[in-house]
Image 1 (cartoon, rainbow, N blue to C red):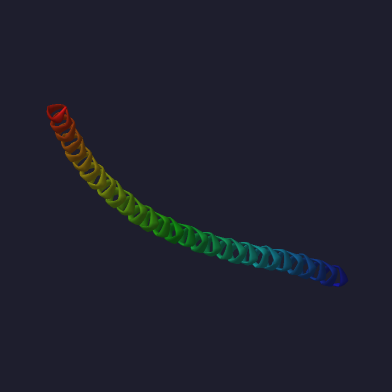
Image 2 (image 1 turned 30 degrees about the vertical axis):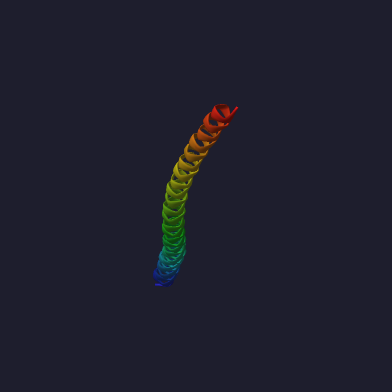
Length: 104
């Protein structure tokens, strides 16, 4: 009977150790899952923030591109006006030269 008590006590100790090991493994698994999910959430937020920054940069780039096109259009128009004025000036100078030659 004494041997039976010792065997039961040993079995209970082994069972307790097994339950403790399973419990510890479960706790560590739970902690790993929690840390993993927190890291995944943090990464998703960082990616969303980066995506928002890319959208803002794309918007700024589009606006700058529109401004550049408008400036180029204005420059071309001003160059046409300058060319027209230069052509008129050349005609006027040519006309004055012709008139001065006739006077001489």
